Length: 118
Length: 227
Image (cartoon, rainbow over all chains, first blue to last red; front, side, top):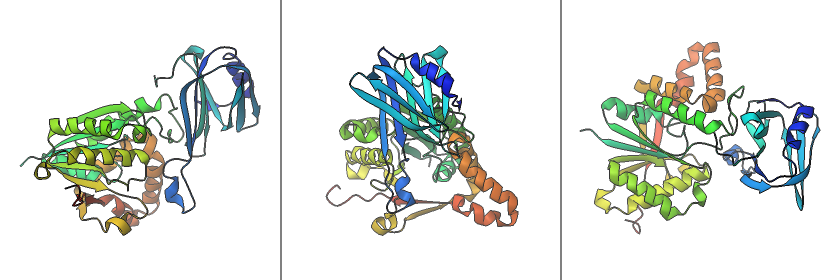
């Protein structure tokens, strides 16, 4: 992955509009967060291969970036995105937010085919 | 006598962090060591520093790292279940126990290494250790293998007491560190700190490496009700 260039990402996400696509969205504190302090809890949200259809998509902000996808009856959004990669000849768009040690904090990914870790 | 050892852990690297020494000692003595790794560590947050993995490539990278770590430890029998990381807790516990039971029936271990139920901190650790207990419990008590549980919850010593098994793994320290290094994507940040400290304070090597030379386990105790 490499640092997000917003114009290129805008173009890439628009390649997924008005069709059924597969969504991977996650954010996590890590499961060991509870060891770092009494008041700390592990918080994770995860969806993989959810099918969505959006007609509007936008990347905004400056490093880190936000991405919002407007669904017919709802929204998907992610904040804290720093890096991106287009894989498999454009079939998959990966967006992720990493901290300074390279740890993943959030991921938003879109694919025309189900994600299967290939 | 050659012993059959079975390590049952959910993630690639669980067998190495805090446990590679005991397993390497078994291998060195000629015991047969098998490993069940239930997931491919798909949900790991560490991607390398600087990152070289992404969410989609991570599991394949971690499986390769695991094989290299097992080589360093001396584990030549690795069972990859490839279940999805972080989801073990949501599986049917009996079905998970069935899977463990089949492996136990086949491998007939004398000793099992696992996390200690309820003290593994990570939900996958607890789900798999509980399934392991459930599976072993199906055997008559005189046929049950000993289970060494690894615990690191904040209150583990309060609840379980001090670990009854303390293993000096100094003689295989090199293998253990090699196994940890093999988990490049996951261990780099930690080992980089250690390497820097060792370089800056070579006189403190003993002190800095001390935590790696000892491993602690709690022998699983069957409650009277579950005996």
